[in-house]
Length: 236
Image 1 (cartoon, rainbow, N blue to C red):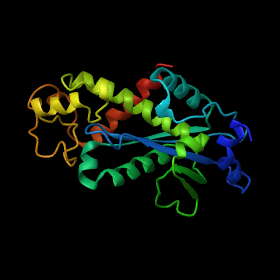
Image 2: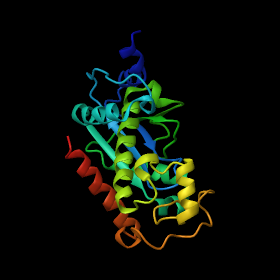
Image 3: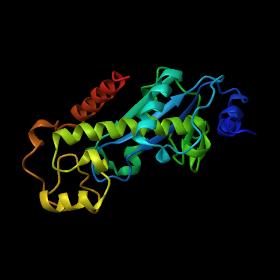
């Protein structure tokens, strides 16, 4: 098999079993100390010609952005879901990730008949899903979902860097780099930091710089993320 057939082998297997609408699912942002976790679901037509053959984490930021818009153009539907840091602290990162996935699936314009996920079991789809280890390297739909989730989350963190400019979110996207940890030590945590994470827990909250300009409630924060998604889409 050539690369195109290999990357589509799982989709073709289940298309041949009668599942016409297969959504690849992946997330971005489980490891950072701040910001939301973002999930994406992508459904392609069966006549799609694959254009992504490697893990999105190995691509340049410019290439991922280009692929993001191509995915949105060629897919039948693309869904994106978010879970805020407040939700992560309340229900833990695994359950928050699953919540973001459910929101991504709900935002699709068509209901998927089958899921291919990157090592994530989704309730309600136990008998209609394929859970793949390193799914973003083995399934085209899953790889594209990985690109969408990462591009959207990176853009949101770049926008949040304007609200909380002292933490350098535009550089590390909330991940625990030495610079980020040093800023937490010096400044305390911001409203978007995940207080349930070990390196953030028990740090004092910063009292200035964005605190009053960022939404307090989960509902308002989720709306903020949706607005940023629409802003990103308009940049095509």
